[in-house]
Length: 129
Figure 1 (cartoon, rainbow, N blue to C red):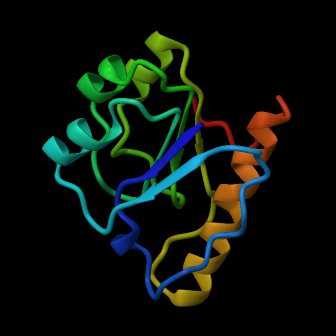
Figure 2 (cartoon, helix red, strand yellow):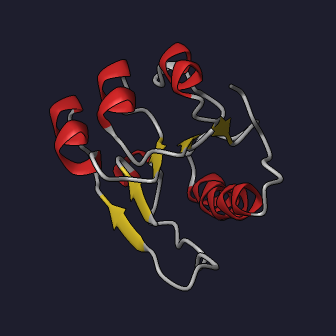
C-alpha cells in the first residue's frame, strides 16, 4: 500500500502522523508538489492525501492503483470529484478543520489516519464523493 501526502507544508507546524495499522506500506510525504510533481510522484499511489494541491482528472485517471483520495481538511474543491466518481474512487475529507494552526493540523493528521483505517475496515467515514 502506497500512501502519498502531496503537500504537508500546507499544514501549520509539523504534525506527527500516528502509525498506520498495516503490515507493509510506504508513506511518502512531500512539502509542496506542483501539479506536474503530483503526476510524477503519485502514479503508483493507492491513497493520495492533499490539503490544497490540485488532484485533477489526469492524475485520477493515470494513477492506476488509486483506491482512495483524502482532502486533508474541510475544503475539497481542489479534487476533481467528477473524475473520482467516474473511476469509482471514494473521496473523504476532514470536516470542520483547516490546517491553519498547529493544533488543527495535528487533529487533521490523526483524522487522516482514522479515515484510512476506517476505509481499510470497509466502513469509510467522512465520504464526500
